[in-house]
Image 1 (cartoon, rainbow, N blue to C red):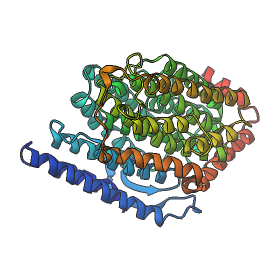
Image 2 (cartoon, rainbow, N blue to C red):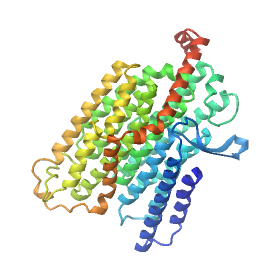
Image 3 (tube, rainbow, N blue to C red):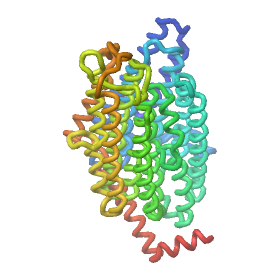
Image 4 (spheres, helix red, strand yellow):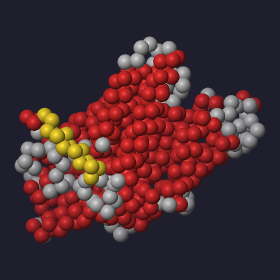
Length: 511
């Protein structure tokens, strides 16, 4: 079943790429094949969800085959409470971005092939239980995303795609160093995910490996100051690509930190936790203040993603059961909310030809404006600001409540970010949607019902999970509790073996 989730879009990508010609019939056929494939993948992921035992913290639906034995590479797949919500999110967004894609875009065969390949590689990364296999999928998603930005992006797409390529290539290099180091220093020579590897590593070795992992995944999250590729990539990417980039691809960074950093190196994680909590505050405040300063709607939403990723870093630093459960909830929540925000910004740009907040005004006007887009934007802004009753509140409250005991000051400072979120979204709404509609934007072409289907789906889920958060939080609660217990056990073991962890750390750093 898990192989089907990866292989089905991969096979469909090959089929779409081999379709003859670029005529209208071929374009429609490519879109239909991609849409049907996305639907089948979502159905398969729902089958996994329905048969998933949320009370079991271990792996389920496991698959294992030897692959490249001389390299120690095995084909190991599995799903647990950490990966399943993200797999479901990726499958859902694949359907929505295909629906949101332009029906008359250039080079449709290549476009839909790359979309399917991107989804396949991201799903593979979430399901991989072999560290080298994870690296393969982690690097594979770089190629289609680079091409999607470089070919279908905006005026500065060459600069943005090249910058994205350089940053993510550096991320891949550090990840490979970390994976090789874990296999070599772990003593087994195997790349299989082994939660007991820390028992065979000294604290100094763990610190060295975690430092490498933090750089690798910190670029992907992104954590300030490794973030500068993200605003450029978002601004130049097309609307569907921005939806996937913010909705799913950033989660590879937070997933990697949780799975490979906190999960494999708990003693070193405890050493780095205070610094990570500070970085969380910096990312939250920096991203929010930059969002306030933006005049481009899309760049504003891009910087808001940096701020909201800071909440997840705070939760991972605290590493309590509630904060980790909140971190997974925030990954899903941010994925849905940011996808809706970028979709709505795309509607505005498509109808008005601009995203400049100094030019836009009065788009909420019922007769001649975009009232439905404006109403959905208000909903998305409230959800992103953490308004009770919507999905964002559940995730953020869980993070703050779970992190306060470990880092009270940092948590309070991150909570300031929720207030700043309200500020920059109120500025966006006031400038773009309220006031008098300029004569240049009179009688704007309305967004059709078909075009609104993805936004209605996203808005419905944001409301539904805000009212009934158990619908997605129970999936990860037991798994996150087990990971938090593993961290506590690892720290207790380190203190038993070396009562003064600070002295041991200073000794290793001096060496």
